[in-house]
Image 1 (tube, rainbow, N blue to C red):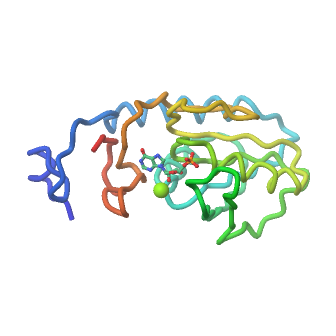
Image 2: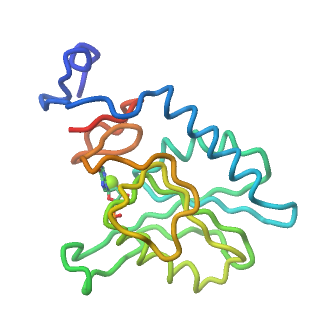
Length: 184
Ligand code: IMP
Ligand code: MG
């Protein structure tokens, strides 16, 4: 557990925090912009379904949807990838699959951070097979290590290639609750 005195001294759970990368204010401003872009992108005929990839996206998702000014439904996905060290043999298992049907709906997958891109690259075909009207990704952070096909439509920040924690992102389940994003 980190305490405010730990944060003040630059320590998180006994680990040195190198720096705050995105402050609470910077995140709030960017999330509001992204929500406006998403609001403007869809038309009156779109049945919007926002799917949050747990657990990392939970805080971003909660802040984002409250700023989207149009009707939408919300559900979650829990994906677990095996063999992530070996790209070719890696498989993606859905530990929680949304109850909601994707067919004919405008689906936006919400991710915390795109790193290797493996999670999304494996998730796309599974989701596309369910015949959504459209399928887009919104991520808060993108390390730009890979280009995806299709590319992520909404990116909050091009992130530094460091290990980031806070605002939902964890290191071994620590630090998810921090209101800002820091590098370890
Ligand atoms: P990818 O499949 O390699 O793109 O990995 C994506 C997932 O790995 C994200 O949803 C995060 O949960 C986790 N991840 C990748 N980079 C970081 C990081 O810098 N901090 C915390 N989690 C990360
Ligand atoms: Mg994670």
